[in-house]
Image 1 (tube, rainbow, N blue to C red):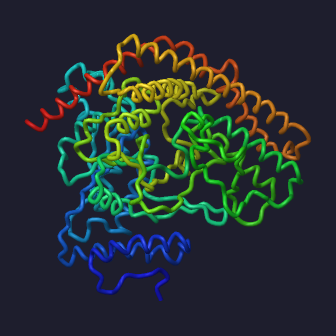
Image 2: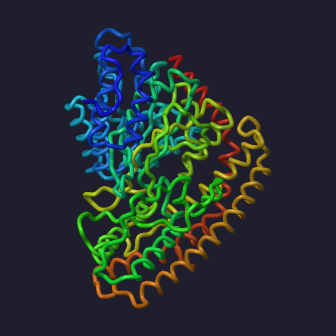
Image 3: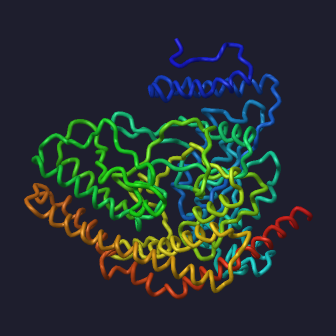
Length: 569
């Protein structure tokens, strides 16, 4: 007997599509995924069957584009999730064609990783997934044909090394490659390698990874039925921001965690299994969420223990302590995001591009990732503000978040993360921290300029310089206040851990805690290398930001002309 509502046995394609929202609402209302999810997936197989029976298939083709650097395990997991997505939902298979293809853009440095990426691509091709590999030799050939002034978009046109150019430069180079795939019936779908075509829900305190979103079906419906040029999704799971801007609220959560631990003995049953864990909505993982118009809802978030079976507080703490260092690779142990159902067709105006989850028509290739050679963080929000200013209602956000996993279970850490060094005795965030700080300076400079009509109108160089300096001053005050808060919270947490804690008898736990506290102090204390690097690079960075903004309108015109010339060849 069907557990979800079903369409009539002989339903037409249009009737099945109209019934989709009804089935979805029932699935998410009941949340009996073990029994209902297979039937939900079968609904889409029925839609594919209609194409097998002769329905004209005018749906979009998708090219899934994945920039990658030294992450073979992530690549394996991501492609496997895509393979499962297509197997379970069958998008495009009903008409006998392959409507979903993959393009991997490799920015790796390690020869072993490069070879592994190619081997993985070949392996999935043999399994039936269409995967192309855009290697560094091909990328260099594209660069050689570019005018020198495009260094504002892709960096050096004749670089000594093609490795670790950065994700934004890799995306821009790939935009040129995509001209070969340009077709009105093709959508370009950019994702990150540390994501999967799954979602994450919290059910009775347990995080469940589910194949519960038919990404390609919903994207096709949106682009065929609504006037959309660029669409961005979001992520669930790990936050999309750097640990550089999450340390403050994590320390707050740790203080609450140890306060609760201290109320009972080590052998007390673990209390960290909430029936419904907090979801870090509205950028609750970000120390400075107020900068983006969000207000904190919770002063602290509870830790959700991942151990199963009966266990005590000591076991919970021992397990948790061994995961703390993952924070520096971008995990947030207490503030994860979970999926909340809302129909994908209910679009919202967008202002930020999630560069690991965005889709666009070929006509939007003119919107390259701005200021890529500066290698700043916040590139997506910067591009988003420009798209918001120019595309208005054709730039949208949809409730189609991918699962974001900063680390891989096989390693217990990230494979590669730009700007995070594990080579010293302490994890060093300074390179990523500096990129985050000046990325914020760039973002809020662009926000201010867009309010004045940028990029259609561009102020004088001296006015841009003055604005950038003003934003830097404001950001410096914000970061200094946040640093002071972190130092204060760190000292309070150290005292809390040392005073009358039963955990002091657990040697490995205390070593792991001390290692984490030392790493926080190293990266956020008064003499932290992160702040020293920001101070040293300030003059050069502000000058480069000003010059890049001033050059942007002309460079984009030249880029558009170059793309047009490629069409004329």
